[in-house]
Amino acid sequence: MRKKKAGHRSWRLINGKVAGRHNGDIMSVEARSRVMSQIKGKNTTPERIIVRELRQRKIYFATHATKLPGKPDIVFRRIKLAVFIDGDFWHGWRLPLWNHKLSEKWQNKIARTRERDQQHFRQLRGEGWTVLRIWEHQVEQSLHDCVERILSVRSSLLKKTD
Image (tube, rainbow, N blue to C red; front, top):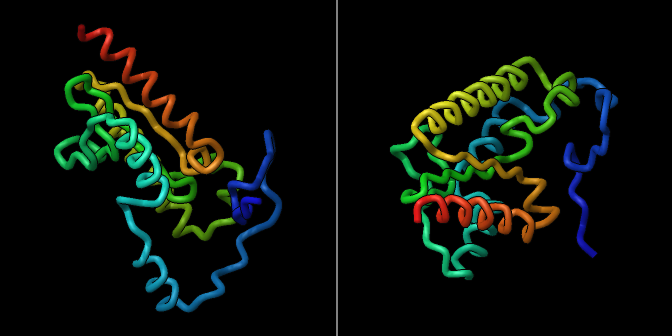
């Protein structure tokens, strides 16, 4: 049986906020800084899983396109499809439900990330790109559905270019 992760992904609320409040950090500033510095921004586990599945199907794409806004995780250049695989915490999935549990520093940091994400998505769409966002919890819940979603959008864009 698959072990269930703790945290916000297990919150199944449809409406209303998650119970609790911010109680302060349990780590010193130095310890928290050390822990946070180890968290990667690219080649995360959800990304690696999706990339592996696409490569096993012999699908060709680029990763981390540094010249595109937001540096999409997976890019199909010819059909202008950009795929972002975002972490639930870092990109604020359902943030209004658990925002009150964060310190002001983290509230601001995640809010800025969400604003930057939206700006990048708008820029890409303005340049004619199709933007697909896949959340970390979606990969954990159904890798098959995530890969099929990418392939479905890719297929429909390929048909338009033919």
